Length: 261
Image 1 (spheres, rainbow, N blue to C red):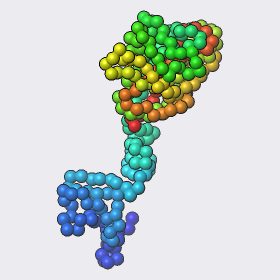
Image 2 (image 1 turned 90 degrees about the vertical axis):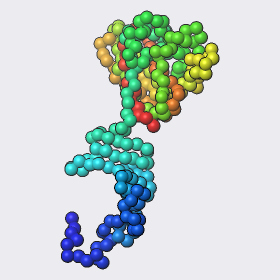
Image 3 (image 1 turned 180 degrees about the horizontal axis):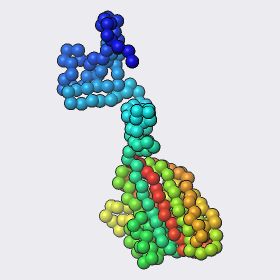
Image 4 (image 1 turned 135 degrees about the vertical axis):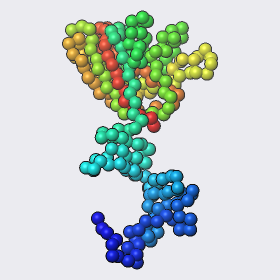
């Protein structure tokens, strides 16, 4: 690094830093830090505040690095993200889990709801709830007098979120090889105080995938394909499994990695 020793200000002023407010200096009002010839930097200061604002958005507007040079904190103003840790994951990353133990498919031609994590024992006490028999689950679902059975099948989305990845672990309880289809869906849910409360509409496939040769001798791991990553606040998320082969019991765990948008 260079030194200013023995050099006159006339020859070094460009390398000196100052605040833009040359009258008041550092005060209670933000003043941008400039070099000696007035070229602005991305920093502004007051007596109690430090602000970083680039002249344009960047994936690394602010970074904290280890002595070896690896970043452990990065502010990405291009993507409105703060990344942390040695893996630089989004700081708002969360995990949502759906799971079931010995879930009996409604039929081999229907999609069956998977309970939100923590309610895996719930499926042993109610009828399995089907969500349609098409290629994808139904986009509109009205369970009328059995709407109450949907309560533990839905995740309320409390803020705008982005789906980053979905992974499924699954087995069945028999030796017959089965083909399982998975869907993660978002819906609008009526909540206006009427008799329609709980009805689902505007279904959107967030992620889907398939596992083959699933039986009780294996745990099949499947990474689902993200089809629509953005989910807005106020929607609900549901997970479905469809056994294309038979109605053998299914054990599965679905892990949804997401971050607050």
